[in-house]
Length: 152
Image 1: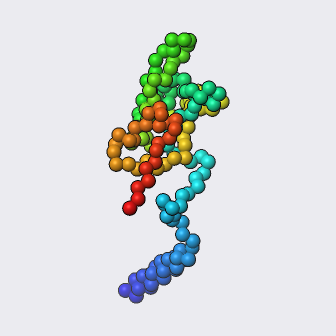
Image 2: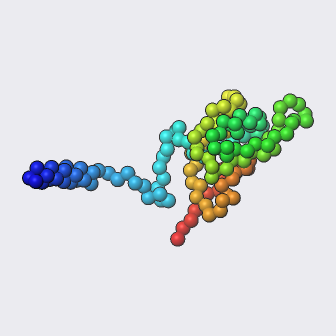
Image 3: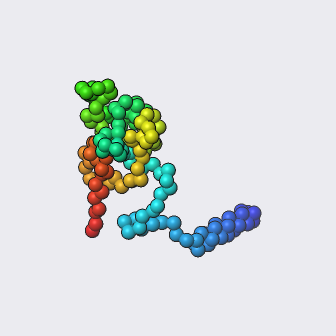
């Protein structure tokens, strides 16, 4: 019975020592609405679409590769044939953020060069009260989702 007391005492002192060490370390939490965290350049936030920098039009060529690569099947693309030449015209591009796991697999197969049409932004604030606000169309994917600030 005496050896149980010795083991318990050493474990108790070890736990108290660990608590005492951590107690004086700087805090890692952030008071979120007032302070924000700077993310690494490779942070994968919300997927977004790029515009063509030269023309301001769609950079997406409607190849459907991102839709096929998505493991969650949260991307829906609707395209129609281009009447003025080859290729397709992007009619509808929808991402369901409820289902998206922000893995970035939709970005990898994009064939547009020198910059890809779909990219992972640094946006991460998606909290909302309605499910319909989690579906982003072409306008929201280009301009970003309007972030609603809720306060008391």
